[in-house]
Image 1 (cartoon, one colour):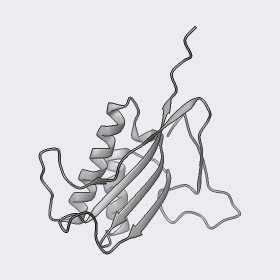
Image 2 (cartoon, one colour):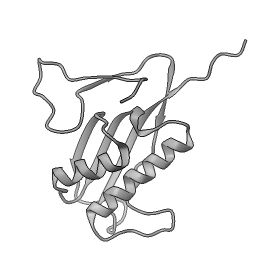
Image 3 (cartoon, helix red, strand yellow):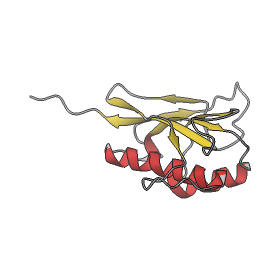
Length: 137
């Protein structure tokens, strides 16, 4: 759970179907980090053949980007996932929870006909919060 972001799902809309929230409020004391779309390709250039394995690699890439910037998956505000074929929802949840922990960011999943290359089956973008540096005295 993030200490930087207030997540909510009001009673006036349909409850979320999965591990996500309908809204996220970020205080002015934070900066925003936007990742480029991360595909399921490892730093060594390996692209697994299954969408589930690519999903795991893409999430791991995002976790590594966040760590490099001094934040964690707990501070993800929004995830946008593009897939060319479905991933069973229970597998998506278990893979995401194994890498990101029990987070519920605002989230969108889109089914697309193709990504940047035919070998890619999933691409994920993230927006995360980072504490703003203290003003210099």
